[in-house]
Amino acid sequence: MSYSTMAYFRFIKKIKIPTALALFGALLTLQACAPNKIYRDTYSVCYASPTQSCDKQAISIHNQGTDGDFQLGFVEYDDQGQLRDRKQMQTVLDHYYPIAGQDDVILTVFVHGWHHSAAPGDGNVASFKEMLKQISLREAQSSKQDGRPKRRVLGVYVGWRGDTITAPVIQHSTFWGRKAVAHEVGLQGVSEVLLRLEEIVNVKAAIEQENPKPLNSRMVVIGHSFGGAVVYTSLQQILADRYIDSRKSKNYQGNAQGFGDLVVLMNPAFEAMRFATLFDIGQSCSDVGVPCRNYSPDQLPRLAVLTSEADAATRYAFPMGRFWVTPFKTHNTLNRLIDTSQNAKAIEVNEYSADNKTIGHFAPFWTHTLEKLPNENVRSDAFNYRSLGNRWAQLDYGSTLELEEVALTHLDRSHPRNPYLNIYVSEELIDGHNDIWGEEVQHFLQDLIIIATTPER
View 1: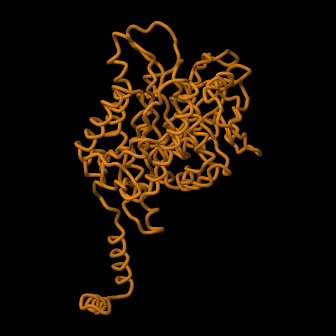
View 2 (view 1 turned 135 degrees about the vertical axis):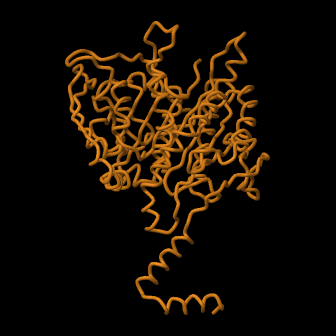
View 3 (view 1 turned 30 degrees about the vertical axis):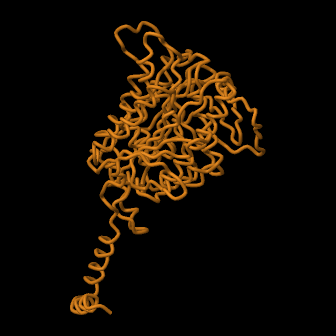
């Protein structure tokens, strides 16, 4: 036994047992603190290989020369929502700008949630890499079918301190602090990087103004858990602005626009009440029994929320965490209208319930369910991915869209092409809060991305 250890135990003997236990707990907690630092602080481009993991680089290139090739950049934030190093973000932007200026791209952004970070070895980093690879493979097949060049697949992983304590059990006490930080990160810093990345996607169109071509570059943003809160906080007002589109020169009601081409929130951990305004905007109903806004067949999904019925963290733990906040606020019961096959219908929205429950577990805001098919629809190598968009355009009230392994069923509570989807997912597809990387739900996400990002002919 070392001298320092012997001295520690002699000190413990001199104090009372409860005090000793408290000190031991404090010592254990200090040792279990999550690192508060930047992880990707090397700004040279790294070519990943079996012998080169690129664990420190802010930019890495993967599977070069194959159909599954992609590039990945990292942007990291501190607890105040500030960039840990502005040079890191600029390195990613400077690397992606010339690529997007020359070639069409699919840019996918992922914001992780609670208990995760941008650390080497984090499971979300590995899973996001696999997702980018699969997007690239599907894009390779789709581009061959269309007879067009394959779009370059670019990824950005947005990292923040998803935990302050790493010790099991104790780390769950970080709920309140990490929720507040998630909203701070979204409010303070992430809006900037998302807008700059959207600018990258549009740069090729600006270059081609004299001889304009179809804009085939696309952007998708994905947030999980408190990462969903980060994304939604940063984009909520932008989404409302893009839907209404109050530009001076606008004099018609066109398709509803969103941010980039698609925003996806997986098991998001924020209150349903925060979604209430966008819910009303998407319904666009004026009176009971009167038809609501009609969406054209080429209206694409702009926001998709997926929540598992088996997500105990957002179903049970989240309301428990909110219990200490909501009693100190006043709440009303709102009368709202939803679009059904029988025209507008009145519903009640209980503000107290919507302020306690997450968006995915608040039934009045559901638009779809997602369930596993009893038998898989096997796809051949010749499967026409462009047909997915055509099938989306044909959706009707209460209809079901059968995809590869899942069935997306419309609940007759909104227009079939309402751009805001709030999907309640079977536990067969997502078995818990962190189980978002399963093959079946990932295939659904990839199909949804294809629907939202397939180039015009």
